[in-house]
Image (cartoon, rainbow over all chains, first blue to last red; front, side, top):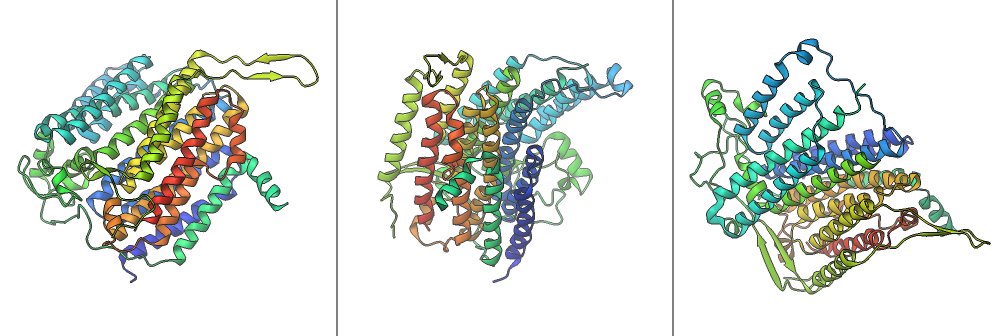
Length: 201
Length: 147
Length: 219
Protein backbone atom coordinates (compact mmCIF):
# COMPACT_ATOMS: atom_id res chain seq x y z
CA UNK A 1 0.00 0.00 0.00
CA UNK A 2 2.87 2.40 0.70
CA UNK A 3 3.44 3.58 -2.85
CA UNK A 4 5.32 6.60 -4.12
CA UNK A 5 2.17 8.68 -3.81
CA UNK A 6 1.79 7.99 -0.09
CA UNK A 7 5.42 8.89 0.62
CA UNK A 8 4.96 12.14 -1.29
CA UNK A 9 1.78 12.95 0.63
CA UNK A 10 3.59 12.17 3.90
CA UNK A 11 6.31 14.72 3.14
CA UNK A 12 3.81 17.42 2.12
CA UNK A 13 1.58 16.76 5.14
CA UNK A 14 4.56 17.08 7.47
CA UNK A 15 5.41 20.37 5.78
CA UNK A 16 1.79 21.41 6.25
CA UNK A 17 1.88 20.52 9.94
CA UNK A 18 5.01 22.65 10.42
CA UNK A 19 3.51 25.58 8.50
CA UNK A 20 0.18 25.50 10.31
CA UNK A 21 1.92 25.16 13.66
CA UNK A 22 3.86 28.34 12.90
CA UNK A 23 0.64 30.05 11.84
CA UNK A 24 -1.18 28.94 14.98
CA UNK A 25 1.51 30.51 17.14
CA UNK A 26 1.86 33.77 15.24
CA UNK A 27 0.28 36.94 16.61
CA UNK A 28 1.52 39.67 14.31
CA UNK A 29 -0.85 40.50 11.45
CA UNK A 30 1.78 41.03 8.79
CA UNK A 31 3.65 37.87 9.70
CA UNK A 32 0.42 35.91 9.50
CA UNK A 33 0.04 37.08 5.90
CA UNK A 34 3.60 36.10 5.04
CA UNK A 35 3.21 32.67 6.66
CA UNK A 36 -0.01 32.11 4.73
CA UNK A 37 1.91 32.65 1.53
CA UNK A 38 4.14 29.77 2.61
CA UNK A 39 1.21 27.60 3.62
CA UNK A 40 -0.22 27.98 0.10
CA UNK A 41 2.77 26.01 -1.20
CA UNK A 42 1.50 22.96 0.69
CA UNK A 43 -1.72 23.04 -1.34
CA UNK A 44 0.24 23.35 -4.57
CA UNK A 45 2.40 20.40 -3.45
CA UNK A 46 -0.59 18.15 -2.86
CA UNK A 47 -2.06 19.04 -6.25
CA UNK A 48 1.32 18.46 -7.95
CA UNK A 49 1.53 14.95 -6.45
CA UNK A 50 -1.30 13.98 -8.76
CA UNK A 51 1.46 13.75 -11.35
CA UNK A 52 -0.62 14.04 -14.51
CA UNK A 53 -1.20 16.82 -17.02
CA UNK A 54 -4.39 17.49 -15.10
CA UNK A 55 -2.28 18.44 -12.06
CA UNK A 56 -0.59 21.18 -14.06
CA UNK A 57 -3.95 22.47 -15.18
CA UNK A 58 -5.22 22.50 -11.58
CA UNK A 59 -2.13 24.21 -10.20
CA UNK A 60 -2.70 27.30 -12.35
CA UNK A 61 -6.12 28.16 -10.88
CA UNK A 62 -4.88 27.24 -7.40
CA UNK A 63 -1.91 29.54 -7.72
CA UNK A 64 -4.01 32.35 -9.16
CA UNK A 65 -6.55 32.21 -6.36
CA UNK A 66 -3.77 32.41 -3.77
CA UNK A 67 -2.06 35.34 -5.47
CA UNK A 68 -5.34 37.20 -5.99
CA UNK A 69 -6.39 36.90 -2.35
CA UNK A 70 -2.90 37.84 -1.22
CA UNK A 71 -3.04 41.01 -3.29
CA UNK A 72 -6.45 42.05 -1.95
CA UNK A 73 -5.43 41.28 1.63
CA UNK A 74 -2.17 43.20 1.46
CA UNK A 75 -4.10 46.22 0.17
CA UNK A 76 -6.56 45.90 3.07
CA UNK A 77 -3.60 45.63 5.43
CA UNK A 78 -2.08 48.83 4.08
CA UNK A 79 -5.37 50.69 4.53
CA UNK A 80 -6.07 49.38 7.99
CA UNK A 81 -2.60 50.21 9.22
CA UNK A 82 -2.83 53.63 7.60
CA UNK A 83 0.19 53.12 5.39
CA UNK A 84 -0.92 55.56 2.72
CA UNK A 85 2.29 57.22 1.75
CA UNK A 86 4.42 54.61 0.16
CA UNK A 87 7.53 56.18 -1.26
CA UNK A 88 8.83 53.85 -3.92
CA UNK A 89 12.12 54.43 -5.56
CA UNK A 90 12.55 53.38 -9.16
CA UNK A 91 15.44 51.27 -10.25
CA UNK A 92 18.41 53.45 -9.50
CA UNK A 93 20.52 52.21 -12.34
CA UNK A 94 21.57 55.23 -14.32
CA UNK A 95 21.89 53.47 -17.64
CA UNK A 96 18.37 52.10 -17.38
CA UNK A 97 16.73 55.17 -15.94
CA UNK A 98 18.00 57.63 -18.52
CA UNK A 99 18.61 55.81 -21.75
CA UNK A 100 16.23 54.20 -24.16
CA UNK A 101 17.12 50.74 -22.92
CA UNK A 102 13.91 50.10 -20.93
CA UNK A 103 11.77 51.01 -23.91
CA UNK A 104 13.68 48.66 -26.20
CA UNK A 105 13.67 45.80 -23.69
CA UNK A 106 9.98 46.31 -22.98
CA UNK A 107 9.06 46.36 -26.67
CA UNK A 108 11.05 43.17 -27.14
CA UNK A 109 9.33 41.49 -24.20
CA UNK A 110 5.85 42.60 -25.26
CA UNK A 111 6.40 41.51 -28.88
CA UNK A 112 7.75 38.15 -27.77
CA UNK A 113 4.85 37.73 -25.35
CA UNK A 114 2.36 38.41 -28.13
CA UNK A 115 4.05 35.77 -30.32
CA UNK A 116 3.97 33.23 -27.48
CA UNK A 117 0.27 33.85 -26.70
CA UNK A 118 -1.58 32.16 -23.89
CA UNK A 119 -0.56 32.29 -20.24
CA UNK A 120 3.15 32.40 -20.89
CA UNK A 121 2.74 35.18 -23.40
CA UNK A 122 0.65 37.25 -21.02
CA UNK A 123 3.27 36.83 -18.33
CA UNK A 124 6.11 37.88 -20.58
CA UNK A 125 4.25 40.85 -22.02
CA UNK A 126 3.18 41.93 -18.53
CA UNK A 127 6.77 41.71 -17.37
CA UNK A 128 7.74 44.02 -20.21
CA UNK A 129 5.17 46.61 -19.15
CA UNK A 130 6.10 46.38 -15.46
CA UNK A 131 9.70 46.91 -16.39
CA UNK A 132 8.76 49.99 -18.36
CA UNK A 133 6.72 51.43 -15.47
CA UNK A 134 9.39 50.79 -12.89
CA UNK A 135 12.26 52.19 -14.86
CA UNK A 136 10.44 55.23 -16.21
CA UNK A 137 8.36 57.14 -13.78
CA UNK A 138 5.31 56.50 -15.81
CA UNK A 139 1.80 57.35 -14.75
CA UNK A 140 -0.84 55.25 -16.41
CA UNK A 141 -4.56 55.80 -16.16
CA UNK A 142 -5.88 53.05 -13.88
CA UNK A 143 -9.36 53.33 -15.37
CA UNK A 144 -8.03 52.50 -18.82
CA UNK A 145 -6.30 49.39 -17.54
CA UNK A 146 -9.40 48.26 -15.66
CA UNK A 147 -11.46 48.68 -18.80
CA UNK A 148 -8.96 46.65 -20.83
CA UNK A 149 -9.07 43.82 -18.32
CA UNK A 150 -12.88 43.93 -18.29
CA UNK A 151 -13.01 43.65 -22.09
CA UNK A 152 -10.55 40.75 -22.07
CA UNK A 153 -12.68 39.02 -19.44
CA UNK A 154 -15.72 39.33 -21.71
CA UNK A 155 -13.67 38.01 -24.65
CA UNK A 156 -12.67 35.05 -22.52
CA UNK A 157 -16.26 34.21 -21.59
CA UNK A 158 -17.29 34.52 -25.24
CA UNK A 159 -14.53 32.07 -26.25
CA UNK A 160 -15.67 29.67 -23.54
CA UNK A 161 -19.22 29.59 -24.90
CA UNK A 162 -17.98 29.08 -28.46
CA UNK A 163 -15.97 26.09 -27.24
CA UNK A 164 -18.95 24.63 -25.47
CA UNK A 165 -21.77 25.25 -27.91
CA UNK A 166 -20.16 25.77 -31.33
CA UNK A 167 -17.20 23.39 -31.22
CA UNK A 168 -16.74 23.52 -34.99
CA UNK A 169 -15.40 27.07 -34.61
CA UNK A 170 -12.84 25.93 -32.05
CA UNK A 171 -9.95 27.77 -33.70
CA UNK A 172 -11.64 31.16 -33.29
CA UNK A 173 -12.39 30.27 -29.67
CA UNK A 174 -8.78 29.25 -29.06
CA UNK A 175 -7.46 32.49 -30.48
CA UNK A 176 -10.07 34.52 -28.61
CA UNK A 177 -9.23 32.84 -25.32
CA UNK A 178 -5.50 33.22 -25.90
CA UNK A 179 -5.80 36.93 -26.73
CA UNK A 180 -8.22 37.42 -23.85
CA UNK A 181 -5.91 35.83 -21.31
CA UNK A 182 -2.92 37.69 -22.73
CA UNK A 183 -4.68 41.06 -22.46
CA UNK A 184 -5.90 40.16 -19.02
CA UNK A 185 -2.62 39.03 -17.54
CA UNK A 186 -0.85 41.96 -19.16
CA UNK A 187 -3.35 44.48 -17.83
CA UNK A 188 -3.27 43.01 -14.33
CA UNK A 189 0.48 42.91 -14.12
CA UNK A 190 0.85 46.45 -15.39
CA UNK A 191 -1.77 47.51 -12.83
CA UNK A 192 0.60 46.17 -10.19
CA UNK A 193 3.31 48.18 -11.91
CA UNK A 194 1.33 51.42 -11.63
CA UNK A 195 0.43 50.76 -8.02
CA UNK A 196 4.10 50.56 -7.23
CA UNK A 197 4.85 53.52 -9.39
CA UNK A 198 2.75 56.20 -7.74
CA UNK A 199 3.65 58.34 -4.76
CA UNK A 200 7.23 58.89 -5.69
CA UNK A 201 9.53 61.25 -3.94
CA UNK B 1 -20.95 27.84 30.93
CA UNK B 2 -18.62 26.12 28.51
CA UNK B 3 -20.57 27.43 25.52
CA UNK B 4 -20.27 30.94 26.85
CA UNK B 5 -16.51 30.50 27.24
CA UNK B 6 -16.13 29.11 23.72
CA UNK B 7 -18.17 31.90 22.21
CA UNK B 8 -16.09 34.39 24.18
CA UNK B 9 -12.93 33.07 22.51
CA UNK B 10 -14.65 33.00 19.13
CA UNK B 11 -15.90 36.55 19.30
CA UNK B 12 -12.38 37.92 19.48
CA UNK B 13 -11.55 37.99 15.82
CA UNK B 14 -7.82 38.26 16.48
CA UNK B 15 -7.91 34.60 17.46
CA UNK B 16 -9.67 33.48 14.30
CA UNK B 17 -6.64 32.74 12.15
CA UNK B 18 -4.89 30.92 14.95
CA UNK B 19 -7.99 28.90 15.68
CA UNK B 20 -8.41 27.91 12.05
CA UNK B 21 -4.71 27.12 11.72
CA UNK B 22 -5.04 24.89 14.78
CA UNK B 23 -7.97 23.07 13.18
CA UNK B 24 -5.95 22.57 9.99
CA UNK B 25 -3.01 21.36 12.07
CA UNK B 26 -5.15 18.68 13.73
CA UNK B 27 -6.62 17.61 10.38
CA UNK B 28 -3.18 17.32 8.81
CA UNK B 29 -1.91 15.22 11.73
CA UNK B 30 -4.98 13.03 11.28
CA UNK B 31 -4.07 12.83 7.61
CA UNK B 32 -0.60 11.53 8.48
CA UNK B 33 -2.11 8.91 10.77
CA UNK B 34 -4.57 7.82 8.07
CA UNK B 35 -1.81 7.16 5.52
CA UNK B 36 -1.21 5.36 3.22
CA UNK B 37 -3.60 6.53 0.53
CA UNK B 38 -4.29 4.35 -2.51
CA UNK B 39 -3.43 5.91 -5.87
CA UNK B 40 -5.74 5.09 -8.75
CA UNK B 41 -3.82 3.91 -11.79
CA UNK B 42 -6.65 4.96 -14.08
CA UNK B 43 -5.97 8.71 -14.22
CA UNK B 44 -7.27 11.35 -16.58
CA UNK B 45 -4.79 13.19 -18.82
CA UNK B 46 -1.85 10.86 -17.99
CA UNK B 47 1.68 12.04 -18.62
CA UNK B 48 4.14 10.15 -20.80
CA UNK B 49 7.87 10.73 -21.17
CA UNK B 50 9.99 10.49 -24.28
CA UNK B 51 13.58 10.91 -23.21
CA UNK B 52 14.86 11.36 -26.77
CA UNK B 53 12.59 14.26 -27.61
CA UNK B 54 14.02 17.77 -27.46
CA UNK B 55 10.80 18.85 -25.76
CA UNK B 56 11.15 16.35 -22.90
CA UNK B 57 9.38 16.39 -20.42
CA UNK B 58 6.77 18.48 -22.21
CA UNK B 59 6.41 16.44 -25.37
CA UNK B 60 2.74 15.52 -25.78
CA UNK B 61 3.13 14.18 -29.28
CA UNK B 62 1.42 14.92 -32.55
CA UNK B 63 1.93 17.81 -34.94
CA UNK B 64 -0.51 20.70 -34.51
CA UNK B 65 -3.88 20.50 -36.26
CA UNK B 66 -3.95 16.71 -36.27
CA UNK B 67 -6.10 15.23 -33.54
CA UNK B 68 -4.38 13.15 -30.86
CA UNK B 69 -6.38 11.25 -28.28
CA UNK B 70 -6.71 12.95 -24.92
CA UNK B 71 -7.92 10.88 -22.00
CA UNK B 72 -10.63 13.24 -20.81
CA UNK B 73 -13.61 12.40 -18.63
CA UNK B 74 -16.25 12.90 -21.29
CA UNK B 75 -14.58 12.88 -24.74
CA UNK B 76 -17.97 13.15 -26.44
CA UNK B 77 -18.48 16.60 -24.90
CA UNK B 78 -15.31 18.06 -26.39
CA UNK B 79 -15.16 16.85 -29.99
CA UNK B 80 -12.35 19.24 -30.92
CA UNK B 81 -10.02 18.45 -28.02
CA UNK B 82 -6.61 17.19 -29.07
CA UNK B 83 -6.08 19.40 -32.10
CA UNK B 84 -3.50 21.71 -30.54
CA UNK B 85 -1.67 19.55 -28.02
CA UNK B 86 1.63 20.76 -29.42
CA UNK B 87 2.32 24.04 -31.05
CA UNK B 88 5.54 25.96 -31.06
CA UNK B 89 6.20 29.55 -31.94
CA UNK B 90 8.79 30.01 -34.69
CA UNK B 91 11.41 30.95 -32.15
CA UNK B 92 10.72 27.91 -29.96
CA UNK B 93 10.70 25.68 -33.02
CA UNK B 94 14.15 26.98 -33.96
CA UNK B 95 15.43 26.36 -30.44
CA UNK B 96 13.96 22.85 -30.35
CA UNK B 97 15.88 21.97 -33.51
CA UNK B 98 19.15 23.41 -32.20
CA UNK B 99 19.19 22.14 -28.63
CA UNK B 100 17.97 19.12 -26.71
CA UNK B 101 17.10 21.09 -23.59
CA UNK B 102 14.18 23.20 -24.73
CA UNK B 103 11.71 21.38 -22.51
CA UNK B 104 13.58 22.43 -19.40
CA UNK B 105 12.76 26.13 -19.64
CA UNK B 106 9.39 27.54 -18.78
CA UNK B 107 9.41 30.04 -21.65
CA UNK B 108 9.52 27.30 -24.23
CA UNK B 109 6.78 25.35 -22.51
CA UNK B 110 4.60 24.11 -25.33
CA UNK B 111 1.39 24.82 -23.50
CA UNK B 112 -0.83 22.92 -25.91
CA UNK B 113 -2.19 20.28 -23.56
CA UNK B 114 -2.57 22.80 -20.77
CA UNK B 115 -4.48 25.05 -23.14
CA UNK B 116 -6.63 22.09 -24.17
CA UNK B 117 -7.54 21.47 -20.55
CA UNK B 118 -7.81 25.08 -19.43
CA UNK B 119 -9.68 26.44 -22.42
CA UNK B 120 -11.61 23.48 -23.67
CA UNK B 121 -12.36 20.46 -21.51
CA UNK B 122 -12.18 22.27 -18.16
CA UNK B 123 -13.03 25.73 -19.42
CA UNK B 124 -15.47 26.45 -16.59
CA UNK B 125 -12.62 26.27 -14.06
CA UNK B 126 -10.73 28.98 -15.84
CA UNK B 127 -13.83 31.15 -16.12
CA UNK B 128 -14.21 31.05 -12.34
CA UNK B 129 -10.48 31.55 -11.81
CA UNK B 130 -10.40 34.59 -14.09
CA UNK B 131 -13.41 35.97 -12.23
CA UNK B 132 -11.71 35.50 -8.86
CA UNK B 133 -8.71 37.42 -10.14
CA UNK B 134 -11.06 40.12 -11.43
CA UNK B 135 -12.82 40.41 -8.06
CA UNK B 136 -9.55 40.53 -6.12
CA UNK B 137 -8.19 43.31 -8.29
CA UNK B 138 -11.47 45.17 -8.05
CA UNK B 139 -11.20 45.08 -4.24
CA UNK B 140 -7.55 46.09 -4.25
CA UNK B 141 -7.96 48.97 -6.67
CA UNK B 142 -11.14 50.21 -4.96
CA UNK B 143 -9.46 50.30 -1.56
CA UNK B 144 -6.34 51.78 -3.09
CA UNK B 145 -8.25 54.67 -4.61
CA UNK B 146 -10.64 55.34 -1.74
CA UNK B 147 -8.51 54.30 1.21
CA UNK C 1 -26.53 2.59 -7.89
CA UNK C 2 -27.52 6.07 -6.98
CA UNK C 3 -28.18 6.88 -3.38
CA UNK C 4 -27.73 10.44 -2.26
CA UNK C 5 -29.72 13.00 -0.37
CA UNK C 6 -30.13 15.10 -3.50
CA UNK C 7 -32.10 12.60 -5.55
CA UNK C 8 -31.64 11.70 -9.20
CA UNK C 9 -30.22 14.45 -11.45
CA UNK C 10 -33.14 15.87 -13.39
CA UNK C 11 -31.18 17.87 -15.91
CA UNK C 12 -27.51 17.78 -16.87
CA UNK C 13 -25.80 20.65 -18.67
CA UNK C 14 -22.50 19.70 -20.28
CA UNK C 15 -19.49 21.98 -20.27
CA UNK C 16 -16.76 19.68 -21.55
CA UNK C 17 -15.46 17.64 -18.64
CA UNK C 18 -17.49 19.59 -16.15
CA UNK C 19 -21.14 18.80 -15.88
CA UNK C 20 -23.65 21.06 -14.24
CA UNK C 21 -26.52 19.05 -12.87
CA UNK C 22 -29.77 19.83 -11.13
CA UNK C 23 -31.35 17.60 -8.53
CA UNK C 24 -34.41 18.54 -6.43
CA UNK C 25 -32.01 19.39 -3.59
CA UNK C 26 -29.65 21.59 -5.56
CA UNK C 27 -32.52 23.27 -7.42
CA UNK C 28 -33.94 24.36 -4.08
CA UNK C 29 -30.61 25.80 -2.96
CA UNK C 30 -30.07 27.38 -6.37
CA UNK C 31 -33.44 29.10 -6.32
CA UNK C 32 -32.80 30.40 -2.82
CA UNK C 33 -29.50 31.94 -3.92
CA UNK C 34 -31.13 33.33 -7.07
CA UNK C 35 -33.97 34.93 -5.13
CA UNK C 36 -31.61 36.60 -2.73
CA UNK C 37 -29.36 37.85 -5.52
CA UNK C 38 -32.37 39.46 -7.20
CA UNK C 39 -33.34 40.98 -3.86
CA UNK C 40 -29.87 42.48 -3.49
CA UNK C 41 -30.09 43.77 -7.04
CA UNK C 42 -33.35 45.66 -6.57
CA UNK C 43 -33.42 46.59 -2.89
CA UNK C 44 -32.31 49.91 -1.49
CA UNK C 45 -29.70 49.66 1.26
CA UNK C 46 -30.47 50.66 4.82
CA UNK C 47 -29.02 53.67 6.54
CA UNK C 48 -27.60 53.05 9.96
CA UNK C 49 -28.67 55.31 12.77
CA UNK C 50 -26.72 55.69 15.98
CA UNK C 51 -28.87 56.56 18.95
CA UNK C 52 -27.43 57.83 22.19
CA UNK C 53 -29.19 56.01 25.00
CA UNK C 54 -30.88 58.11 27.59
CA UNK C 55 -31.29 61.05 25.28
CA UNK C 56 -32.95 62.15 22.09
CA UNK C 57 -29.68 62.50 20.16
CA UNK C 58 -29.22 60.42 17.06
CA UNK C 59 -27.20 60.64 13.89
CA UNK C 60 -27.17 58.77 10.60
CA UNK C 61 -23.89 57.46 9.29
CA UNK C 62 -22.60 58.98 6.08
CA UNK C 63 -22.18 56.39 3.37
CA UNK C 64 -20.94 57.36 -0.05
CA UNK C 65 -22.76 56.23 -3.18
CA UNK C 66 -19.62 54.69 -4.66
CA UNK C 67 -19.13 52.55 -1.57
CA UNK C 68 -22.70 51.27 -1.78
CA UNK C 69 -22.34 50.61 -5.49
CA UNK C 70 -19.14 48.64 -4.95
CA UNK C 71 -20.65 46.59 -2.16
CA UNK C 72 -23.71 45.86 -4.25
CA UNK C 73 -21.43 44.64 -7.04
CA UNK C 74 -19.61 42.36 -4.58
CA UNK C 75 -22.89 41.05 -3.16
CA UNK C 76 -24.18 40.19 -6.63
CA UNK C 77 -20.89 38.49 -7.49
CA UNK C 78 -21.21 36.56 -4.24
CA UNK C 79 -24.72 35.50 -5.20
CA UNK C 80 -23.59 34.33 -8.62
CA UNK C 81 -20.71 32.37 -7.10
CA UNK C 82 -23.11 30.75 -4.64
CA UNK C 83 -25.45 29.78 -7.46
CA UNK C 84 -22.50 28.26 -9.33
CA UNK C 85 -21.38 26.30 -6.29
CA UNK C 86 -24.91 24.96 -5.82
CA UNK C 87 -25.23 23.37 -9.25
CA UNK C 88 -21.70 22.47 -10.34
CA UNK C 89 -20.97 18.79 -10.81
CA UNK C 90 -17.20 18.90 -10.49
CA UNK C 91 -15.23 18.78 -7.24
CA UNK C 92 -12.48 21.19 -8.27
CA UNK C 93 -14.96 23.58 -9.82
CA UNK C 94 -16.89 23.57 -6.56
CA UNK C 95 -13.74 24.50 -4.62
CA UNK C 96 -13.10 27.39 -7.00
CA UNK C 97 -16.65 28.71 -6.58
CA UNK C 98 -16.21 28.38 -2.82
CA UNK C 99 -12.98 30.37 -2.93
CA UNK C 100 -14.83 33.02 -4.94
CA UNK C 101 -17.56 33.23 -2.31
CA UNK C 102 -14.82 33.71 0.29
CA UNK C 103 -13.15 36.60 -1.49
CA UNK C 104 -16.41 38.36 -2.37
CA UNK C 105 -17.41 38.15 1.29
CA UNK C 106 -14.16 39.88 2.18
CA UNK C 107 -14.90 42.49 -0.48
CA UNK C 108 -18.40 43.21 0.87
CA UNK C 109 -17.00 44.01 4.28
CA UNK C 110 -13.63 45.55 3.41
CA UNK C 111 -15.15 48.42 1.43
CA UNK C 112 -16.52 49.95 4.63
CA UNK C 113 -14.45 52.86 5.82
CA UNK C 114 -14.24 51.99 9.49
CA UNK C 115 -11.11 50.77 11.17
CA UNK C 116 -12.96 48.27 13.29
CA UNK C 117 -14.75 46.70 10.36
CA UNK C 118 -11.62 46.62 8.21
CA UNK C 119 -9.69 44.88 10.93
CA UNK C 120 -12.38 42.20 11.08
CA UNK C 121 -12.37 41.94 7.29
CA UNK C 122 -8.61 41.42 7.32
CA UNK C 123 -8.77 38.60 9.86
CA UNK C 124 -11.62 37.04 7.95
CA UNK C 125 -9.59 37.31 4.74
CA UNK C 126 -6.68 35.52 6.39
CA UNK C 127 -8.96 32.62 7.33
CA UNK C 128 -10.39 32.54 3.79
CA UNK C 129 -6.88 32.42 2.36
CA UNK C 130 -5.83 29.66 4.77
CA UNK C 131 -8.98 27.71 3.89
CA UNK C 132 -7.95 27.39 0.24
CA UNK C 133 -5.20 24.99 1.40
CA UNK C 134 -7.44 22.17 2.72
CA UNK C 135 -9.97 22.97 0.00
CA UNK C 136 -7.64 22.41 -2.96
CA UNK C 137 -5.76 19.62 -1.16
CA UNK C 138 -9.04 17.78 -0.60
CA UNK C 139 -10.00 18.08 -4.28
CA UNK C 140 -6.53 16.87 -5.36
CA UNK C 141 -6.77 13.80 -3.11
CA UNK C 142 -10.22 13.09 -4.59
CA UNK C 143 -8.65 13.12 -8.07
CA UNK C 144 -5.63 11.00 -7.08
CA UNK C 145 -7.57 8.29 -5.26
CA UNK C 146 -10.60 7.95 -7.51
CA UNK C 147 -9.07 9.12 -10.80
CA UNK C 148 -12.00 11.42 -11.43
CA UNK C 149 -13.33 14.79 -10.34
CA UNK C 150 -16.85 14.39 -11.67
CA UNK C 151 -19.59 14.02 -9.08
CA UNK C 152 -21.73 12.11 -11.60
CA UNK C 153 -18.99 9.47 -11.80
CA UNK C 154 -18.72 9.37 -8.01
CA UNK C 155 -22.46 8.81 -7.77
CA UNK C 156 -22.26 5.67 -9.89
CA UNK C 157 -20.31 3.94 -7.13
CA UNK C 158 -17.90 2.15 -9.49
CA UNK C 159 -14.89 4.24 -8.48
CA UNK C 160 -12.65 3.48 -5.46
CA UNK C 161 -13.98 4.79 -2.17
CA UNK C 162 -13.07 8.37 -1.26
CA UNK C 163 -10.79 8.46 1.81
CA UNK C 164 -12.06 10.14 4.93
CA UNK C 165 -9.24 12.67 4.96
CA UNK C 166 -10.24 14.11 1.57
CA UNK C 167 -13.81 14.59 2.79
CA UNK C 168 -12.55 16.19 6.00
CA UNK C 169 -10.34 18.60 4.11
CA UNK C 170 -13.16 19.61 1.78
CA UNK C 171 -15.41 20.19 4.77
CA UNK C 172 -12.83 22.22 6.70
CA UNK C 173 -12.13 24.30 3.61
CA UNK C 174 -15.79 25.20 3.20
CA UNK C 175 -16.03 26.02 6.91
CA UNK C 176 -13.08 28.39 6.58
CA UNK C 177 -14.32 30.11 3.43
CA UNK C 178 -17.82 30.52 4.72
CA UNK C 179 -16.85 31.02 8.37
CA UNK C 180 -19.72 28.71 9.21
CA UNK C 181 -19.18 28.23 12.96
CA UNK C 182 -17.78 31.67 13.58
CA UNK C 183 -20.98 33.65 13.64
CA UNK C 184 -19.93 35.14 16.92
CA UNK C 185 -16.99 36.72 15.12
CA UNK C 186 -19.16 37.65 12.21
CA UNK C 187 -21.11 39.90 14.55
CA UNK C 188 -18.24 42.33 14.18
CA UNK C 189 -18.84 42.39 10.49
CA UNK C 190 -22.52 43.05 10.93
CA UNK C 191 -21.61 46.41 12.37
CA UNK C 192 -20.93 47.33 8.79
CA UNK C 193 -23.87 49.25 7.38
CA UNK C 194 -25.89 48.06 4.42
CA UNK C 195 -28.33 45.35 5.41
CA UNK C 196 -28.95 43.26 2.29
CA UNK C 197 -25.27 43.07 1.40
CA UNK C 198 -24.01 41.86 4.74
CA UNK C 199 -26.74 39.23 5.00
CA UNK C 200 -25.40 37.84 1.71
CA UNK C 201 -22.24 36.76 3.58
CA UNK C 202 -24.25 34.59 5.93
CA UNK C 203 -26.63 33.19 3.36
CA UNK C 204 -23.83 32.15 1.02
CA UNK C 205 -21.92 30.32 3.75
CA UNK C 206 -25.07 28.54 4.89
CA UNK C 207 -25.86 27.38 1.35
CA UNK C 208 -22.25 26.27 0.77
CA UNK C 209 -22.40 24.21 3.90
CA UNK C 210 -25.62 22.54 2.81
CA UNK C 211 -24.09 21.71 -0.56
CA UNK C 212 -20.82 20.32 0.80
CA UNK C 213 -22.81 17.92 2.99
CA UNK C 214 -24.33 16.50 -0.18
CA UNK C 215 -20.93 16.24 -1.89
CA UNK C 216 -19.31 14.47 1.05
CA UNK C 217 -22.09 11.88 1.03
CA UNK C 218 -21.16 10.91 -2.54
CA UNK C 219 -18.58 8.25 -3.26
